[in-house]
Length: 126
Length: 504
Image (cartoon, rainbow over all chains, first blue to last red; front, side, top):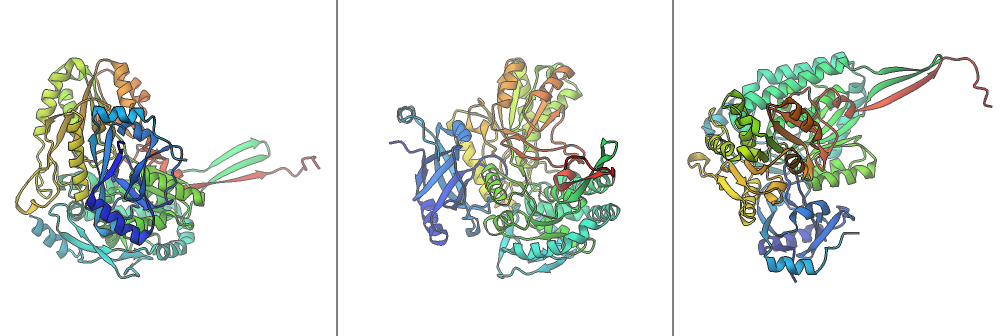
């Protein structure tokens, strides 16, 4: 099964540490300005997802969402959530640790695209 | 150069080693006693420490204490105070420019000749237009009159981005104060210094509590501000997910929001720009190179260039040459045109887009890597101005990279140009370059964006409304109409008749 979102080991470790501070967490992929195109990490349920969001999968025990309209432009790529030293981004919970989650990307191979297409359109959040 | 600059501003007591929050007209240490280091993107080294605080309630106490008196202060007096702020900032313009460059990494040329003069002018603009604002008298019938008054909202929350820290704070503060509101403001944690220096300069001009500045991280200070039931409005500049979250919080309190959430602005060059190799063509080429302004860290960065097919090769040859002439270097060198990205994570994000752009098959016409400048700025965050060539479905055409990166594609005719221009989630800015006035008008109206620069780009006068269509946000900034965004409408409906209606 082809995964639409993956996470690096370093980011997995950070998520575990943050879960110790904040409890269950979730991700939402942002777009647009300043801190845009950054994955935002929130306490589970803090950001209300709805039918305009696509759940891309689960990383380190956290559901990962992207806006449905943005998904249409991003769907040919796998997202790989990494972490780098950095400062702040919206209300994402890792900022005070002096690090930022970062979305790296990989273009799916033709074979992966066929598999994803065979699996049908991804669900929407409720 | 960096050390001389630090020494210069330190001597003026403008940069302190450690700052506090500015609450109720005083510098107040964070209640939990925590601070974080603020590095300069020029060198990657520590510039000063600022509070890592969550003192939103303290700031709101001070703002609420000040709001009745400030709201009732005459317009003439509020205007006088705003003008005094403008004068004070203007007389310290060079130092503020230096501070902003140290804090953000943008070239001193821009802070000196663009950011700071605009800051001064926006204060003056709102000092002026508020005096020209009028309520309304509507005659409903011969004996009934509807009076409309502007009233301040009260206390508002403002969250400031890091790309033009002092200017963006001014865009929000000047109209809010002119309209009679008190403010709790959170600077971006990447660039807190400039706003703190501004507060130091204007502290004794403003009544205590009218502006309160709380520093800290978004999750610790921004979130409790946005969620707070004691604000009457929240204004935010940033990205879409945080924008949605702020709207969710605002919906809990049923308060209005202004959101400015970025874009992927098309810059459209019609074939007729190349009809002659004259001043206008030269101006259009400069318009293309505008993607590198402020290191591309502008919500309206013309990050998609659409060039008409029949002149594509000729135009791009000149456009690439123009881009290669952009002088990258030490932000404090007055001849530098492009400086440092504002933070390490921004640098990493831009590099990640170079990777995805190449994977998707976009061709790099110039740039495409981190710039290694050596010397004292070797550890700073520098990126080469970069041109990608590809198609509008690629991610580098669809997501705001917020770096000095433009993605170029070609179009055949007007219909295709418009289709590509509008094929984006965003709608903040756009540029049109043509010698044909009729086409310019049609495109100006047809592009789904809040600001369509026509034969110009990246001008930000106070007297022009700025804001987004589509996912680029809600509301506007600047222009006199901005006063309305910070005011309630009070209608007093008066009957001057002494007769009963006869209903009961």
